[in-house]
Image (cartoon, rainbow, N blue to C red; front, side):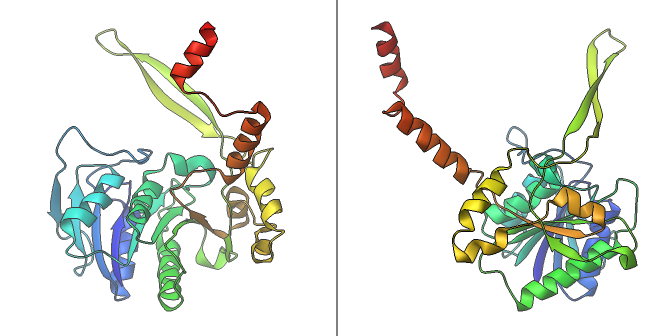
Length: 294
């Protein structure tokens, strides 16, 4: 298959080398377009007010891999690859392997997930891959799982494009307990802003902190929605889907389907009910102003 691979750790990160080289060795046609430096936690940011540069990279990846280092964000890299660099669209967009998990609400900040999401926005199925460690350099089990997953998807494709957010435990392959379809949980952080003064007397801050216990929302909208959908027979399997932040602690590889449409179906119903209780729709601001004056 034709594969486009990006990341947010940069062109010299071990994770992307391991992934690209493993898949190229397996016979896939691999192109890499990734940031020229570390771009973690950039979310889905785009570069709009300065030019984006991309330079061919040689001697870094497997000889069969065509690679470019891009001055932009992870989302820039994928957008540029699809719109200007690659002669034809890839079959899949992959991102990673990230150094550190992207679980729960991490996906909202993640450059790794955003690179994959950019592919999905363009109608191309995508996979974001992350290793659940900031220190381990043992990326090969994650790369092997990516190869197995792609081989499976090639012979048994999904009915429509999805983004699969895959997190792999940072343990030996023999200690991985399998894989599981999981839903997105919540990761909360203790944010610490370290205040410093530069040589010119100006104040600046470093953002630091640590992960609190990962949890599901007390009022879990997924749980409420799934209870309603389970009344329909085809949605019966939504029951008891594990949470990604919990499953990874059991040494399970987690696969969480994501989509760029952030509309809350449950929220739509709640908002409609709220409006119905008011007895009339919200007013246009001009109408609201005249109503307040009267």
